[in-house]
Length: 229
Ligand SMILES: *Cc1c(COP(=O)(O)O)cnc(C)c1O
Image (cartoon, rainbow, N blue to C red; front, side):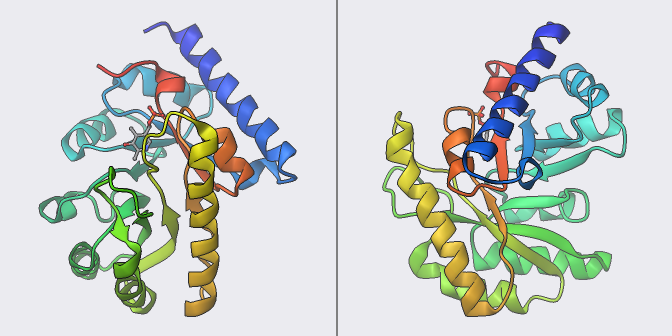
């Protein structure tokens, strides 16, 4: 790892976020950057932390636990990707936000664990916007049931939606998915009388387009840390 190059890439991403927000007529601080550090070393996270990045995303529970032990406790961690119900114990109350709630079963399990710990857990619902190639995320037809459960949940604080678009290799083909996620969040907010203001969408190849379409959280890994092992 070359620390100077790492910091430079991170600064470049921040600048691009700023410009994309500006272009969209949005405030710069309406977009949060999750630095996706999965399969990258603790040293790289520590370097960015020293420069002021306090929010990181991880996909694997064990790997994240090891990193948390070694790093400052004021780092915020987001859990990304698919969460298995047997890992719920290691995630609730530890991650500030769980991005990938995609089933009623998982939601119930998270609620149960939060009750045990007497805590509240922030969550996003990952939506599968009808693509065949994409496996994770709740299908739109199953969303109402999950939404109803989360809206009524005493322990889960439902803050918005998350999207992993299909790999289309072209930002302009992905953009309509960002628009649909935003519209869906708006519709659900009205339906359930709540503020689903967080839109977690946009990664290395498309975060600027996602910001133009309303992303409040972008998850960027490769462009900051380089290729994963
Ligand atoms: C790995 C991962 C990312 C980061 O992807 P990059 O293409 O490296 O920016 C973002 N979101 C999720 C859910 C991921 O699993």
